[in-house]
Structures are given as structure tokens and as C-alpha cells.
Image 1 (spheres, rainbow, N blue to C red):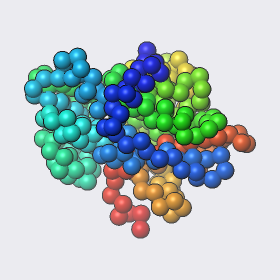
Image 2: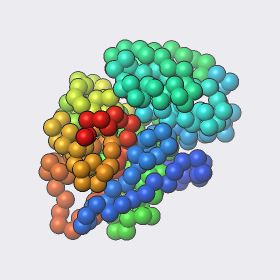
Image 3: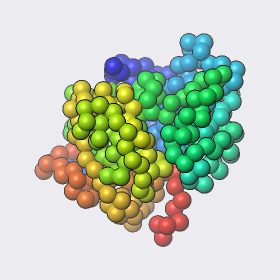
Image 4: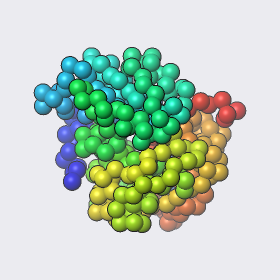
Length: 302
């Protein structure tokens, strides 16, 4: 099981490659971790750098470079990390991936292959490549450890932190946060009711396939939660809540109206848990909301 030591090793490995994103006060006992300001627009850049650099250290980075499957953000992170490290990247995305993300992939120098309507189909196509380093979007120990470096920063920047609220898709982010913060901070997992891979797994006692739909499906649309995230979530006995599409849309709008913060719908799910009451902090509970991605078209916010 991934530990805080793995996360600290990742922090050393990727130091100087990623941004230390700021934390801002969002009201009494409330904080926003602005990870949407990360290179390539999401937290996944941390995990991708750690995955590729760790493979290079082991002598396991082939000349063919890296391959990834992604609804967008993991692909952008893979493309950026590969470009910065001077290796080729090929990214498989569903045909439903947002145009803004597909265009960015090309600008970052990745070869883009569109396959299938959902992440699972793009994943199947990507894994057919055997000559490159496959970078799983969320269920990989090095990806998870890299993502967990966000948690170390939160511990440094928010004194007396009680709770961190995290949007969940496949589970690579929340797994890293649990690994970094377990036994120190409560972790709350937030998912759309129409894409509830972790919530369904916790209910069933094992990862299960779920239907995927809704406004946040492009970034939180994993059909099945990763094994790493499931094991860590069970072991840490985290809190799991659901939010509906209306709450997500409203939270995204409020983040813009109240704070001038532009995020994607999946990211807004975390804030939606607080605004909708799906998660109700106790009086005086010091809560950080992790805003994890900003690869979105902001035209519908005005």
C-alpha cells in the first residue's frame, strides 16, 4: 500500500518540475487549494512527472516514449511532462473529449488518437501499444504518489486542517491525498450521482462497473474506480458523498461569481458538496476544498 514515504519521495523527484500551487482563504474555516493553476491545468501533471521520472531512474523508459489514455487532463499532463523531459507521447482520447483539451494536446506536441465514446474504450486502444511506457491515468502507484504531493503542501499551508474535500473520478487524486494525509486529516470523496465509481465500490465492498453520464463525465467519468484508491479508501474509512448535476453547475457558477475562479465541472463537484449540504462540516471544522482542474470552456460562465 502506498505510504506517506512514497509521497515524500515523489515530492523530491518532481521538485522544480511542478508548481507549488497557492492556498487561499475562502471564508471562516474554509480554504481553496488552487491546483487548477498547475502546469497543463490539472493535478495530474504531478503524477505524470513522477511516473516518467521514476521509470527513467529504473532504466524502464523506452525510446518510443509514453502512451496514455485520457478524457483530457491525464493526456495533457502526459504530453506536457513528455515534452519537458524530451520523450515522445501518444494520447488516446474518447471522441467525446472536450475540443479545448484535444486542441491543447496537439499544441503540447502529443500525437492524438481518438477512440471510442468513453474513457474505457480509449484505454483499451491505448493498452494495445506495447513498445511505450503506459501511463495509467489514475491506477498506478507512481501516479498516485505524485498526486499525493498536494497533500503535503496542504499540511504546510493550512494550520490545524481538519478536512479536505476531493472530487473523485478514477481515484488517482484521492488515493494520493489519503496516502499523504491519513491519520492526520479527514478525507471526503465527492462524486456525481451519475458517475459514482468509488461510492458504488464502497457500497459493494469491491470495485464494480458503473454507468457514466452527466456534466462532469469528461473528467470524472471512470467506469470503475482504481484498485489503489479503493484499497486506501477502505483502509482509511473515508467519507463518501454524492452531488447531482444541478449542484455541480451551480457550484461552478458560484466559484466564478464569488471568487472569479474558473474550473471544469468535475472540479466544481468538490465545492458542490459544501454548497448543497451533501457534506456538512461541524462548527469550527477547518475545511480545504481541492480545486483540481481548469481545462474548460469558460464561455458558459458569462
